[in-house]
Length: 243
Image (cartoon, rainbow, N blue to C red; front, side):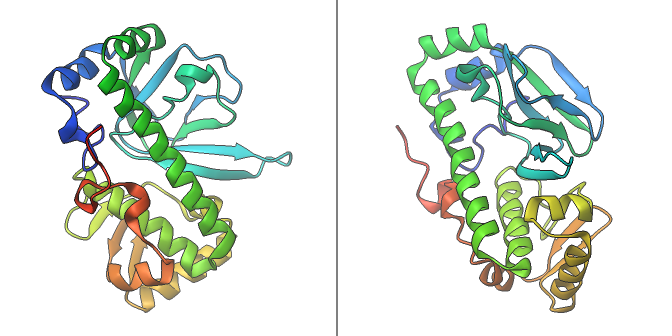
């Protein structure tokens, strides 16, 4: 099942077999996208939403000088732009980081699905609220943490999210990010990112090299990050309840 990672580790087990099949059947075209490709532009009129099957996608905004700020990272199992369903446009851009595979959901099909299946509608709404929870945590990270804490928090979050969708091999996962990307996500210069990554590696907490991340000591890294995974609403954390 292509959509098997939707709400995996959160509330997937509360979806009925019929609801899971409905999500699968509602899918339109499946597209393979190259790395570093803009998928959706700010203000563009949208008649479909996008589900991420494989790869990584980011949300970003540019200032007047063309400097980019990453405001979210999406992993497989995420609906990238489900809020475009009621809003019809986005206030930011969306693009791939590495090669990605996505599924397209026509808004007319989503309308029929949500009118027919109210419980599934609440789960789709739940998935957009997860985005909002992560946005709040990113604001906290940028506003209150130093360089070590920002980078530590970024990697702690991704590690937990990828663990939930079975994309971590022990303590290692793949991430097609450059140090420039990391700086744009954490509000740091390239020099500062490089220095911080070296410090975390030398302290035995984190290694990030050539697109591979190894969590050397998650517990210590989480302390540096002031990281608490409650906002990710994991099933085993007691947050993803039946509704």
